[in-house]
Amino acid sequence: MPALAADIVVVCSESSHSVRHERVTSAPRVTSINQLELNQPTMEAISTRIASFKKSKRVKNLEKPSSTIALKWPHPADFQANPETLAEAGFYYDPSYDDPDNVTCFTCEKQLGGWEEGDDPFLIHWGKCGQTCCWASIRCGLLVDVDHSGRWGLNLLYHTRINQFPS
Image (cartoon, rainbow, N blue to C red; front, side):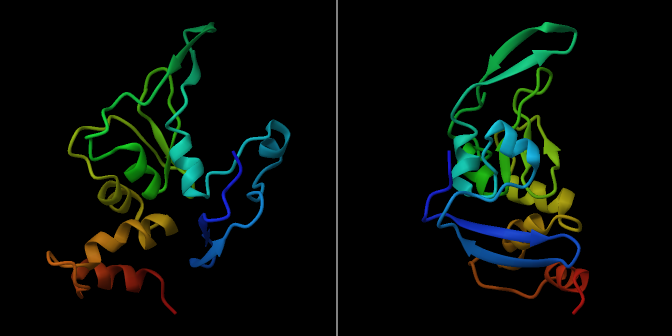
């Protein structure tokens, strides 16, 4: 599914720790020759990440390579870790036979599974990858930069993040 013209893509550069926002007006860029060969969409656009949760995925049973099963996102919509919040936190659905609710970050490729009802994808991504993943640092870290009333605050985590990327 190609990115829509209304999608905003955040492009992160791990080497320079820079982030820029781009409006997608054409097909998403191909990040590997395998995506081009397999005609796979990139996961940079949030609409593509959300769509990854909508279709069932066929996965192989590693103990029986000739055996596959179809998996769908296993949790109800009232989970905090639902397709929309997971996609906004940078994840797409990437299940395996042993981990039916596994997700992968489109930027740092961190894989997480075993989601429970109250798990917050933003805080979990920030906590596990905030020092190494530009999406976790910039997007998921926003929640730690505001106080209980939604105002921007200068707290310890904010200063930690600012010091993480020196000018």
